[in-house]
Length: 579
Image (cartoon, rainbow, N blue to C red; front, side):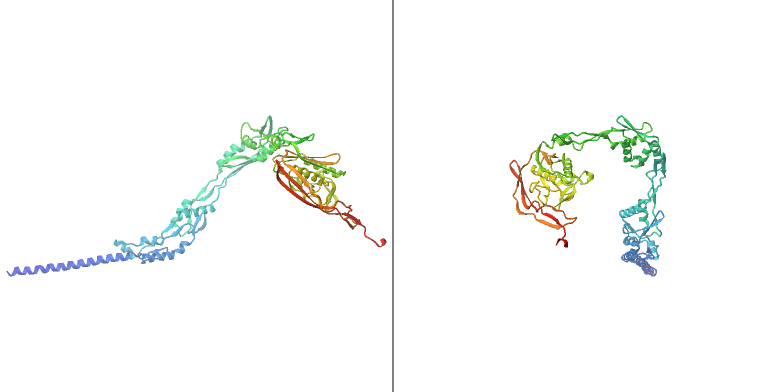
Protein backbone atom coordinates (compact mmCIF):
# COMPACT_ATOMS: atom_id res chain seq x y z
CA UNK A 1 0.00 0.00 0.00
CA UNK A 2 2.80 2.43 0.82
CA UNK A 3 4.64 2.08 -2.58
CA UNK A 4 1.59 2.73 -4.58
CA UNK A 5 0.89 5.97 -2.83
CA UNK A 6 4.43 7.26 -3.35
CA UNK A 7 4.33 6.74 -7.10
CA UNK A 8 1.07 8.56 -7.40
CA UNK A 9 2.49 11.62 -5.70
CA UNK A 10 5.82 11.86 -7.71
CA UNK A 11 4.39 11.65 -11.26
CA UNK A 12 2.57 15.06 -11.35
CA UNK A 13 5.70 16.93 -10.15
CA UNK A 14 7.76 15.87 -13.20
CA UNK A 15 5.08 17.01 -15.65
CA UNK A 16 4.85 20.46 -14.11
CA UNK A 17 8.58 21.10 -14.45
CA UNK A 18 8.63 20.21 -18.05
CA UNK A 19 5.71 22.44 -18.79
CA UNK A 20 7.40 25.35 -17.13
CA UNK A 21 10.51 24.82 -19.18
CA UNK A 22 8.53 24.57 -22.36
CA UNK A 23 6.74 27.79 -21.54
CA UNK A 24 9.97 29.59 -20.98
CA UNK A 25 11.27 28.46 -24.33
CA UNK A 26 8.10 29.42 -26.04
CA UNK A 27 8.17 32.82 -24.39
CA UNK A 28 11.73 33.40 -25.47
CA UNK A 29 10.97 32.38 -29.04
CA UNK A 30 7.88 34.54 -29.13
CA UNK A 31 9.79 37.50 -27.76
CA UNK A 32 12.50 37.06 -30.36
CA UNK A 33 9.91 36.89 -33.11
CA UNK A 34 8.21 40.00 -31.89
CA UNK A 35 11.55 41.77 -31.68
CA UNK A 36 12.41 40.63 -35.23
CA UNK A 37 9.13 41.95 -36.54
CA UNK A 38 9.48 45.21 -34.68
CA UNK A 39 13.01 45.62 -36.07
CA UNK A 40 11.83 44.85 -39.62
CA UNK A 41 9.10 47.45 -39.33
CA UNK A 42 11.48 50.00 -37.85
CA UNK A 43 13.98 49.51 -40.68
CA UNK A 44 11.26 49.54 -43.39
CA UNK A 45 11.22 53.38 -43.72
CA UNK A 46 14.96 53.87 -43.43
CA UNK A 47 17.76 53.77 -45.98
CA UNK A 48 20.25 50.97 -45.35
CA UNK A 49 23.57 51.73 -43.73
CA UNK A 50 26.43 52.92 -45.95
CA UNK A 51 24.23 54.03 -48.88
CA UNK A 52 25.25 57.10 -50.88
CA UNK A 53 24.06 58.54 -54.20
CA UNK A 54 26.56 60.47 -56.30
CA UNK A 55 28.65 61.05 -53.16
CA UNK A 56 25.70 62.10 -50.98
CA UNK A 57 25.38 59.90 -47.83
CA UNK A 58 21.76 59.09 -47.06
CA UNK A 59 22.28 56.01 -44.83
CA UNK A 60 19.87 55.51 -41.92
CA UNK A 61 17.68 58.43 -43.15
CA UNK A 62 13.96 58.02 -43.43
CA UNK A 63 12.35 58.00 -46.86
CA UNK A 64 11.31 61.67 -46.60
CA UNK A 65 14.66 62.75 -45.13
CA UNK A 66 16.60 60.96 -47.86
CA UNK A 67 14.41 62.41 -50.64
CA UNK A 68 14.77 65.94 -49.26
CA UNK A 69 18.54 65.53 -48.91
CA UNK A 70 18.97 64.31 -52.51
CA UNK A 71 16.71 67.06 -53.85
CA UNK A 72 18.91 69.65 -52.17
CA UNK A 73 22.32 68.10 -52.82
CA UNK A 74 21.86 66.87 -56.40
CA UNK A 75 20.05 69.93 -57.83
CA UNK A 76 23.27 71.82 -58.60
CA UNK A 77 24.91 68.80 -60.21
CA UNK A 78 21.82 68.10 -62.28
CA UNK A 79 21.98 71.66 -63.66
CA UNK A 80 25.61 71.36 -64.80
CA UNK A 81 26.22 71.15 -68.54
CA UNK A 82 26.49 67.64 -69.88
CA UNK A 83 29.70 67.25 -71.83
CA UNK A 84 29.47 65.30 -75.06
CA UNK A 85 32.14 64.54 -77.62
CA UNK A 86 31.39 64.73 -81.35
CA UNK A 87 34.13 63.80 -83.78
CA UNK A 88 36.78 64.80 -81.22
CA UNK A 89 35.16 68.10 -80.20
CA UNK A 90 33.79 68.44 -76.66
CA UNK A 91 30.54 70.44 -76.37
CA UNK A 92 28.28 71.17 -73.41
CA UNK A 93 24.52 70.83 -73.55
CA UNK A 94 22.01 72.29 -71.11
CA UNK A 95 20.21 69.39 -69.33
CA UNK A 96 17.14 71.55 -68.74
CA UNK A 97 16.72 72.31 -72.46
CA UNK A 98 17.46 68.68 -73.31
CA UNK A 99 14.74 67.39 -70.94
CA UNK A 100 17.17 65.68 -68.51
CA UNK A 101 16.18 65.65 -64.82
CA UNK A 102 17.00 63.66 -61.60
CA UNK A 103 14.19 62.08 -59.51
CA UNK A 104 15.16 61.88 -55.81
CA UNK A 105 11.93 60.10 -54.89
CA UNK A 106 12.40 57.37 -57.51
CA UNK A 107 16.01 56.96 -56.39
CA UNK A 108 15.04 56.49 -52.69
CA UNK A 109 11.92 54.34 -53.20
CA UNK A 110 13.75 51.07 -54.07
CA UNK A 111 16.00 51.49 -51.01
CA UNK A 112 13.23 51.36 -48.41
CA UNK A 113 10.31 49.05 -47.68
CA UNK A 114 9.22 46.23 -45.36
CA UNK A 115 11.00 42.86 -45.60
CA UNK A 116 11.31 39.87 -43.24
CA UNK A 117 14.15 38.30 -45.19
CA UNK A 118 16.95 37.96 -42.64
CA UNK A 119 19.61 38.32 -45.26
CA UNK A 120 18.08 41.58 -46.46
CA UNK A 121 17.78 42.81 -42.87
CA UNK A 122 21.40 41.88 -42.25
CA UNK A 123 22.52 43.83 -45.31
CA UNK A 124 20.32 46.69 -44.18
CA UNK A 125 22.12 47.05 -40.85
CA UNK A 126 25.60 45.95 -41.88
CA UNK A 127 26.15 48.30 -44.88
CA UNK A 128 25.47 48.58 -48.65
CA UNK A 129 27.18 49.83 -51.81
CA UNK A 130 26.59 53.20 -53.52
CA UNK A 131 23.56 53.33 -55.78
CA UNK A 132 22.96 55.26 -59.04
CA UNK A 133 20.57 58.15 -59.18
CA UNK A 134 17.32 57.57 -61.09
CA UNK A 135 16.94 60.07 -63.99
CA UNK A 136 14.01 61.11 -66.17
CA UNK A 137 14.41 61.88 -69.88
CA UNK A 138 12.02 63.83 -72.10
CA UNK A 139 12.81 62.04 -75.35
CA UNK A 140 11.21 64.75 -77.51
CA UNK A 141 13.25 67.57 -75.95
CA UNK A 142 16.44 65.50 -76.04
CA UNK A 143 15.94 64.63 -79.72
CA UNK A 144 15.31 68.30 -80.60
CA UNK A 145 18.48 69.39 -78.76
CA UNK A 146 20.59 66.75 -80.47
CA UNK A 147 19.08 67.50 -83.91
CA UNK A 148 20.12 71.15 -83.52
CA UNK A 149 23.57 70.06 -82.33
CA UNK A 150 23.85 67.67 -85.27
CA UNK A 151 23.12 70.55 -87.66
CA UNK A 152 25.76 72.74 -85.98
CA UNK A 153 28.49 70.11 -85.98
CA UNK A 154 27.79 68.32 -89.24
CA UNK A 155 30.60 68.24 -91.75
CA UNK A 156 28.81 68.62 -95.10
CA UNK A 157 29.62 66.34 -97.92
CA UNK A 158 31.39 67.89 -100.90
CA UNK A 159 29.95 66.90 -104.25
CA UNK A 160 32.24 66.04 -107.06
CA UNK A 161 32.18 68.50 -109.96
CA UNK A 162 32.70 68.22 -113.67
CA UNK A 163 33.22 70.97 -116.23
CA UNK A 164 34.22 71.38 -119.84
CA UNK A 165 36.52 74.07 -121.22
CA UNK A 166 39.01 74.40 -124.04
CA UNK A 167 38.13 70.94 -125.30
CA UNK A 168 38.94 69.23 -121.98
CA UNK A 169 36.96 67.65 -119.15
CA UNK A 170 37.92 68.71 -115.62
CA UNK A 171 36.67 67.07 -112.40
CA UNK A 172 37.05 67.50 -108.64
CA UNK A 173 36.81 64.51 -106.31
CA UNK A 174 33.77 64.05 -104.04
CA UNK A 175 34.34 64.10 -100.26
CA UNK A 176 31.94 62.37 -97.84
CA UNK A 177 30.61 64.31 -94.88
CA UNK A 178 29.95 63.32 -91.27
CA UNK A 179 26.84 63.74 -89.14
CA UNK A 180 25.79 62.71 -85.64
CA UNK A 181 23.56 59.64 -85.39
CA UNK A 182 20.81 61.36 -83.40
CA UNK A 183 18.92 58.23 -82.36
CA UNK A 184 21.99 56.40 -81.07
CA UNK A 185 23.30 59.60 -79.47
CA UNK A 186 20.01 60.04 -77.59
CA UNK A 187 20.35 56.52 -76.13
CA UNK A 188 23.92 57.24 -75.01
CA UNK A 189 23.00 60.53 -73.35
CA UNK A 190 19.84 59.19 -71.71
CA UNK A 191 21.66 56.27 -70.08
CA UNK A 192 24.75 58.03 -68.78
CA UNK A 193 24.36 61.79 -68.67
CA UNK A 194 24.28 62.15 -64.85
CA UNK A 195 27.04 59.84 -63.68
CA UNK A 196 29.36 59.84 -66.71
CA UNK A 197 32.91 60.62 -65.46
CA UNK A 198 34.06 61.69 -68.94
CA UNK A 199 32.40 63.36 -71.96
CA UNK A 200 29.84 61.07 -73.56
CA UNK A 201 31.09 60.08 -76.99
CA UNK A 202 28.24 60.49 -79.46
CA UNK A 203 28.28 58.21 -82.50
CA UNK A 204 28.46 59.72 -86.01
CA UNK A 205 27.59 58.29 -89.38
CA UNK A 206 29.03 59.20 -92.79
CA UNK A 207 27.04 61.57 -95.03
CA UNK A 208 27.62 60.52 -98.64
CA UNK A 209 27.82 63.21 -101.37
CA UNK A 210 25.03 63.44 -103.90
CA UNK A 211 27.54 63.52 -106.72
CA UNK A 212 29.88 60.62 -106.10
CA UNK A 213 32.59 59.17 -108.28
CA UNK A 214 30.19 56.91 -110.13
CA UNK A 215 28.02 59.93 -111.04
CA UNK A 216 31.09 61.80 -112.31
CA UNK A 217 32.11 58.85 -114.48
CA UNK A 218 28.61 58.61 -115.99
CA UNK A 219 28.53 62.36 -116.69
CA UNK A 220 31.91 62.27 -118.39
CA UNK A 221 30.76 59.50 -120.69
CA UNK A 222 27.16 60.54 -121.31
CA UNK A 223 27.43 64.36 -121.26
CA UNK A 224 30.94 65.80 -121.51
CA UNK A 225 32.34 63.60 -124.26
CA UNK A 226 29.36 64.08 -126.62
CA UNK A 227 29.34 67.83 -125.90
CA UNK A 228 32.96 68.13 -127.05
CA UNK A 229 32.56 65.84 -130.03
CA UNK A 230 31.51 68.52 -132.53
CA UNK A 231 29.29 71.49 -133.42
CA UNK A 232 25.49 71.55 -133.27
CA UNK A 233 23.49 72.51 -136.37
CA UNK A 234 20.41 74.67 -135.89
CA UNK A 235 17.77 74.31 -138.61
CA UNK A 236 15.71 77.49 -139.14
CA UNK A 237 13.07 77.04 -141.84
CA UNK A 238 15.14 75.87 -144.84
CA UNK A 239 18.33 77.50 -143.55
CA UNK A 240 21.13 76.00 -141.47
CA UNK A 241 23.46 77.67 -138.99
CA UNK A 242 26.20 76.13 -136.89
CA UNK A 243 27.07 76.54 -133.21
CA UNK A 244 30.72 75.56 -132.73
CA UNK A 245 32.05 73.64 -129.73
CA UNK A 246 33.49 76.89 -128.33
CA UNK A 247 29.97 78.34 -128.05
CA UNK A 248 28.62 75.12 -126.54
CA UNK A 249 31.31 74.94 -123.86
CA UNK A 250 30.95 78.67 -123.08
CA UNK A 251 27.27 78.09 -122.36
CA UNK A 252 27.63 74.69 -120.70
CA UNK A 253 27.55 73.73 -117.04
CA UNK A 254 27.01 70.25 -115.61
CA UNK A 255 25.25 70.28 -112.25
CA UNK A 256 22.98 68.04 -110.18
CA UNK A 257 19.23 68.34 -110.66
CA UNK A 258 17.14 66.12 -108.37
CA UNK A 259 20.25 64.09 -107.57
CA UNK A 260 21.33 63.52 -111.18
CA UNK A 261 24.05 65.36 -113.09
CA UNK A 262 22.57 67.09 -116.12
CA UNK A 263 23.73 69.45 -118.83
CA UNK A 264 22.61 73.06 -118.49
CA UNK A 265 23.11 75.62 -121.26
CA UNK A 266 23.07 79.33 -120.52
CA UNK A 267 20.06 80.62 -122.42
CA UNK A 268 21.53 84.09 -123.04
CA UNK A 269 24.69 82.64 -124.60
CA UNK A 270 22.80 80.25 -126.89
CA UNK A 271 20.15 82.79 -127.93
CA UNK A 272 22.76 85.47 -128.65
CA UNK A 273 24.80 82.99 -130.69
CA UNK A 274 21.74 81.94 -132.73
CA UNK A 275 20.68 85.55 -133.30
CA UNK A 276 24.17 86.50 -134.46
CA UNK A 277 24.10 83.71 -137.05
CA UNK A 278 20.53 84.07 -138.33
CA UNK A 279 20.38 84.55 -142.11
CA UNK A 280 18.81 87.81 -143.31
CA UNK A 281 15.13 87.73 -144.11
CA UNK A 282 14.25 84.98 -141.62
CA UNK A 283 12.61 87.33 -139.14
CA UNK A 284 10.09 90.10 -139.78
CA UNK A 285 9.24 92.91 -137.39
CA UNK A 286 5.60 93.31 -136.37
CA UNK A 287 3.99 96.53 -137.53
CA UNK A 288 1.32 98.28 -135.48
CA UNK A 289 -1.83 99.57 -137.07
CA UNK A 290 -1.88 103.37 -137.17
CA UNK A 291 -4.00 106.24 -138.36
CA UNK A 292 -2.72 108.19 -141.35
CA UNK A 293 -4.35 111.20 -142.94
CA UNK A 294 -5.08 110.97 -146.65
CA UNK A 295 -6.43 114.19 -148.16
CA UNK A 296 -7.14 115.38 -144.63
CA UNK A 297 -9.20 112.33 -143.69
CA UNK A 298 -7.98 109.64 -141.22
CA UNK A 299 -7.58 106.14 -142.59
CA UNK A 300 -6.13 103.02 -140.97
CA UNK A 301 -2.81 101.62 -142.13
CA UNK A 302 -3.44 97.98 -141.08
CA UNK A 303 -1.28 96.05 -138.66
CA UNK A 304 0.98 93.26 -139.80
CA UNK A 305 2.17 90.33 -137.68
CA UNK A 306 5.89 89.76 -137.32
CA UNK A 307 7.81 86.49 -137.49
CA UNK A 308 10.62 85.42 -135.22
CA UNK A 309 12.45 82.36 -133.98
CA UNK A 310 10.89 80.84 -130.86
CA UNK A 311 13.85 81.49 -128.61
CA UNK A 312 12.00 80.08 -125.58
CA UNK A 313 12.61 76.52 -126.78
CA UNK A 314 15.81 76.77 -128.81
CA UNK A 315 18.17 76.30 -125.84
CA UNK A 316 16.50 73.05 -124.77
CA UNK A 317 16.67 71.77 -128.36
CA UNK A 318 20.38 72.61 -128.60
CA UNK A 319 21.03 70.85 -125.25
CA UNK A 320 19.44 67.63 -126.57
CA UNK A 321 21.44 67.78 -129.80
CA UNK A 322 24.69 68.53 -127.91
CA UNK A 323 24.41 65.21 -126.03
CA UNK A 324 23.68 63.16 -129.12
CA UNK A 325 26.33 60.87 -130.56
CA UNK A 326 24.66 60.68 -133.96
CA UNK A 327 22.60 63.42 -135.66
CA UNK A 328 23.40 66.72 -133.90
CA UNK A 329 20.68 69.01 -135.28
CA UNK A 330 18.35 71.27 -133.27
CA UNK A 331 15.14 72.28 -135.03
CA UNK A 332 14.14 75.90 -134.39
CA UNK A 333 10.47 76.77 -134.63
CA UNK A 334 9.09 80.06 -135.88
CA UNK A 335 6.37 82.03 -134.11
CA UNK A 336 4.26 85.00 -135.06
CA UNK A 337 4.58 88.28 -133.18
CA UNK A 338 1.30 90.06 -132.66
CA UNK A 339 1.38 93.83 -133.13
CA UNK A 340 0.79 95.93 -130.03
CA UNK A 341 -1.90 97.96 -131.76
CA UNK A 342 -4.23 95.90 -133.93
CA UNK A 343 -6.34 97.03 -136.85
CA UNK A 344 -9.48 95.87 -135.02
CA UNK A 345 -8.64 98.03 -132.02
CA UNK A 346 -8.33 101.16 -134.16
CA UNK A 347 -11.56 100.32 -135.99
CA UNK A 348 -13.34 100.19 -132.61
CA UNK A 349 -12.26 103.74 -131.67
CA UNK A 350 -15.06 105.43 -133.62
CA UNK A 351 -12.80 107.93 -135.44
CA UNK A 352 -15.18 109.25 -138.13
CA UNK A 353 -15.74 113.02 -137.85
CA UNK A 354 -14.34 116.31 -136.61
CA UNK A 355 -15.75 117.02 -133.14
CA UNK A 356 -13.64 120.08 -132.33
CA UNK A 357 -11.32 122.41 -134.26
CA UNK A 358 -9.68 125.81 -133.98
CA UNK A 359 -7.15 128.01 -135.77
CA UNK A 360 -5.01 131.01 -134.89
CA UNK A 361 -3.03 133.44 -137.04
CA UNK A 362 0.75 133.44 -136.66
CA UNK A 363 3.16 136.12 -137.87
CA UNK A 364 6.24 135.84 -140.06
CA UNK A 365 9.25 134.57 -138.13
CA UNK A 366 11.35 131.71 -139.52
CA UNK A 367 12.24 130.13 -136.16
CA UNK A 368 8.72 130.48 -134.81
CA UNK A 369 7.17 128.99 -137.97
CA UNK A 370 9.58 126.03 -137.87
CA UNK A 371 8.61 125.35 -134.26
CA UNK A 372 4.89 125.50 -135.06
CA UNK A 373 5.33 123.11 -137.99
CA UNK A 374 7.34 120.64 -135.88
CA UNK A 375 4.73 120.74 -133.12
CA UNK A 376 1.96 120.06 -135.67
CA UNK A 377 3.93 117.12 -137.03
CA UNK A 378 4.45 115.58 -133.57
CA UNK A 379 0.79 115.94 -132.55
CA UNK A 380 -0.76 114.72 -135.80
CA UNK A 381 -1.80 111.07 -135.56
CA UNK A 382 -1.73 110.93 -131.75
CA UNK A 383 -4.56 108.72 -130.49
CA UNK A 384 -5.98 109.32 -127.01
CA UNK A 385 -8.06 106.33 -125.93
CA UNK A 386 -11.10 106.63 -123.64
CA UNK A 387 -9.97 107.50 -120.12
CA UNK A 388 -6.42 108.41 -121.17
CA UNK A 389 -4.77 111.79 -120.52
CA UNK A 390 -2.79 113.66 -123.17
CA UNK A 391 0.23 115.82 -122.26
CA UNK A 392 1.51 118.35 -124.79
CA UNK A 393 4.90 118.65 -123.09
CA UNK A 394 5.41 114.87 -123.17
CA UNK A 395 4.34 114.71 -126.82
CA UNK A 396 6.68 117.51 -127.92
CA UNK A 397 9.64 116.19 -125.94
CA UNK A 398 12.72 118.16 -124.82
CA UNK A 399 13.12 121.47 -126.59
CA UNK A 400 16.69 121.25 -127.88
CA UNK A 401 18.37 122.06 -131.16
CA UNK A 402 19.27 118.37 -131.51
CA UNK A 403 15.54 117.57 -131.50
CA UNK A 404 14.85 120.09 -134.25
CA UNK A 405 13.65 123.08 -132.21
CA UNK A 406 14.59 126.70 -132.95
CA UNK A 407 15.06 129.88 -130.95
CA UNK A 408 12.24 132.40 -131.28
CA UNK A 409 10.37 135.01 -129.27
CA UNK A 410 8.94 134.03 -125.90
CA UNK A 411 7.34 135.99 -123.07
CA UNK A 412 9.06 135.61 -119.70
CA UNK A 413 7.70 137.47 -116.67
CA UNK A 414 5.75 139.80 -118.95
CA UNK A 415 8.79 140.72 -121.05
CA UNK A 416 9.38 139.63 -124.66
CA UNK A 417 12.67 137.77 -125.01
CA UNK A 418 14.23 134.87 -126.96
CA UNK A 419 14.01 131.18 -126.04
CA UNK A 420 14.22 127.67 -127.48
CA UNK A 421 10.83 126.57 -128.79
CA UNK A 422 9.37 130.06 -129.11
CA UNK A 423 5.85 130.07 -130.57
CA UNK A 424 4.70 126.87 -128.86
CA UNK A 425 2.30 128.81 -126.65
CA UNK A 426 0.38 129.68 -129.83
CA UNK A 427 0.20 126.02 -130.77
CA UNK A 428 -0.89 125.16 -127.20
CA UNK A 429 -3.62 127.80 -127.35
CA UNK A 430 -4.91 126.45 -130.66
CA UNK A 431 -4.95 122.89 -129.29
CA UNK A 432 -6.67 124.01 -126.08
CA UNK A 433 -9.53 125.64 -127.98
CA UNK A 434 -10.01 122.62 -130.24
CA UNK A 435 -10.32 120.30 -127.22
CA UNK A 436 -12.43 122.89 -125.37
CA UNK A 437 -15.08 122.81 -128.11
CA UNK A 438 -14.82 119.02 -128.35
CA UNK A 439 -15.96 118.86 -124.70
CA UNK A 440 -12.81 117.07 -123.50
CA UNK A 441 -11.90 117.36 -119.81
CA UNK A 442 -9.41 120.13 -119.00
CA UNK A 443 -6.78 118.58 -116.69
CA UNK A 444 -4.20 121.37 -116.80
CA UNK A 445 -3.76 124.65 -118.65
CA UNK A 446 -2.72 128.19 -117.80
CA UNK A 447 -3.39 131.39 -119.75
CA UNK A 448 -0.69 134.00 -120.32
CA UNK A 449 -0.11 136.66 -117.68
CA UNK A 450 -0.66 139.33 -120.37
CA UNK A 451 -3.31 139.36 -123.06
CA UNK A 452 -2.43 139.03 -126.76
CA UNK A 453 -5.17 140.01 -129.16
CA UNK A 454 -4.37 137.13 -131.54
CA UNK A 455 -5.87 134.74 -128.97
CA UNK A 456 -9.43 134.54 -127.55
CA UNK A 457 -9.89 136.14 -124.15
CA UNK A 458 -9.69 133.62 -121.28
CA UNK A 459 -9.34 130.70 -123.71
CA UNK A 460 -5.62 130.46 -124.30
CA UNK A 461 -2.84 128.30 -122.86
CA UNK A 462 0.81 129.15 -122.48
CA UNK A 463 3.46 126.40 -122.34
CA UNK A 464 6.76 126.15 -120.48
CA UNK A 465 8.80 122.98 -120.45
CA UNK A 466 8.94 121.36 -117.00
CA UNK A 467 6.64 123.96 -115.42
CA UNK A 468 3.44 124.65 -117.35
CA UNK A 469 1.71 121.93 -119.37
CA UNK A 470 -1.43 121.59 -121.47
CA UNK A 471 -3.20 118.34 -120.55
CA UNK A 472 -6.66 117.01 -121.32
CA UNK A 473 -8.46 113.75 -120.59
CA UNK A 474 -10.61 111.82 -123.04
CA UNK A 475 -13.93 111.77 -121.16
CA UNK A 476 -15.87 110.05 -123.95
CA UNK A 477 -16.44 106.40 -124.89
CA UNK A 478 -14.68 106.97 -128.23
CA UNK A 479 -11.09 107.45 -129.25
CA UNK A 480 -9.74 110.96 -129.90
CA UNK A 481 -7.40 111.49 -132.87
CA UNK A 482 -5.48 114.76 -133.32
CA UNK A 483 -4.53 116.48 -136.56
CA UNK A 484 -2.59 119.76 -136.86
CA UNK A 485 -0.96 121.77 -139.65
CA UNK A 486 0.34 125.24 -140.53
CA UNK A 487 -0.79 126.84 -143.78
CA UNK A 488 1.33 128.87 -146.13
CA UNK A 489 -0.47 131.97 -144.85
CA UNK A 490 0.73 131.06 -141.33
CA UNK A 491 -2.60 129.88 -139.94
CA UNK A 492 -2.20 127.25 -137.22
CA UNK A 493 -4.96 124.61 -137.37
CA UNK A 494 -5.84 121.81 -134.91
CA UNK A 495 -8.63 119.27 -135.44
CA UNK A 496 -10.05 116.72 -133.01
CA UNK A 497 -11.48 113.62 -134.72
CA UNK A 498 -13.84 111.22 -132.93
CA UNK A 499 -17.58 110.52 -132.75
CA UNK A 500 -19.71 113.41 -131.53
CA UNK A 501 -20.59 112.84 -127.90
CA UNK A 502 -20.93 116.17 -126.07
CA UNK A 503 -23.15 119.14 -126.94
CA UNK A 504 -20.86 122.07 -126.07
CA UNK A 505 -21.79 125.66 -125.29
CA UNK A 506 -19.07 128.21 -124.44
CA UNK A 507 -19.75 131.77 -123.24
CA UNK A 508 -17.13 134.47 -122.57
CA UNK A 509 -18.09 137.35 -120.29
CA UNK A 510 -17.38 141.03 -120.85
CA UNK A 511 -14.15 142.44 -119.47
CA UNK A 512 -14.24 143.93 -115.98
CA UNK A 513 -11.79 145.64 -113.63
CA UNK A 514 -9.92 147.06 -116.61
CA UNK A 515 -6.52 148.63 -115.83
CA UNK A 516 -4.61 150.65 -118.45
CA UNK A 517 -0.92 149.82 -119.06
CA UNK A 518 1.77 152.14 -117.71
CA UNK A 519 5.05 153.30 -119.14
CA UNK A 520 7.96 152.24 -116.96
CA UNK A 521 11.37 153.89 -117.29
CA UNK A 522 14.52 152.01 -116.42
CA UNK A 523 18.23 152.78 -116.63
CA UNK A 524 19.67 151.73 -119.92
CA UNK A 525 21.88 148.68 -119.84
CA UNK A 526 22.18 145.06 -120.93
CA UNK A 527 19.25 144.02 -118.71
CA UNK A 528 16.89 146.71 -120.01
CA UNK A 529 14.81 145.97 -123.11
CA UNK A 530 12.39 148.52 -124.47
CA UNK A 531 8.81 147.47 -125.07
CA UNK A 532 5.79 149.43 -126.29
CA UNK A 533 2.68 149.57 -124.16
CA UNK A 534 0.23 146.81 -125.02
CA UNK A 535 -3.14 145.51 -123.89
CA UNK A 536 -4.77 146.66 -120.65
CA UNK A 537 -5.24 144.36 -117.68
CA UNK A 538 -8.70 142.94 -117.01
CA UNK A 539 -10.68 140.01 -115.59
CA UNK A 540 -12.76 137.68 -117.74
CA UNK A 541 -14.93 134.57 -117.19
CA UNK A 542 -15.32 131.63 -119.57
CA UNK A 543 -18.25 129.28 -118.89
CA UNK A 544 -18.52 125.94 -120.67
CA UNK A 545 -21.65 123.81 -120.51
CA UNK A 546 -21.67 120.13 -121.55
CA UNK A 547 -24.94 118.39 -122.40
CA UNK A 548 -25.96 114.86 -123.35
CA UNK A 549 -29.30 114.58 -125.13
CA UNK A 550 -30.10 118.12 -124.04
CA UNK A 551 -29.49 117.39 -120.35
CA UNK A 552 -26.78 119.42 -118.63
CA UNK A 553 -24.05 117.13 -117.34
CA UNK A 554 -21.40 119.70 -116.48
CA UNK A 555 -21.12 123.47 -116.23
CA UNK A 556 -17.82 125.04 -115.29
CA UNK A 557 -16.67 128.66 -115.13
CA UNK A 558 -12.98 129.58 -115.27
CA UNK A 559 -11.91 133.07 -114.27
CA UNK A 560 -8.61 134.68 -115.29
CA UNK A 561 -7.00 138.01 -114.46
CA UNK A 562 -4.66 139.51 -117.09
CA UNK A 563 -1.97 141.97 -116.06
CA UNK A 564 -1.62 145.10 -118.18
CA UNK A 565 1.20 144.97 -120.73
CA UNK A 566 3.29 147.85 -119.50
CA UNK A 567 5.73 149.67 -121.74
CA UNK A 568 9.43 149.88 -120.91
CA UNK A 569 11.72 152.79 -121.81
CA UNK A 570 15.47 152.51 -121.29
CA UNK A 571 16.93 155.92 -120.31
CA UNK A 572 20.55 156.88 -120.35
CA UNK A 573 21.86 158.24 -117.01
CA UNK A 574 22.08 162.06 -116.90
CA UNK A 575 25.54 163.73 -116.90
CA UNK A 576 26.79 167.26 -116.10
CA UNK A 577 26.90 168.01 -119.84
CA UNK A 578 23.09 167.55 -119.99
CA UNK A 579 22.51 170.59 -117.74
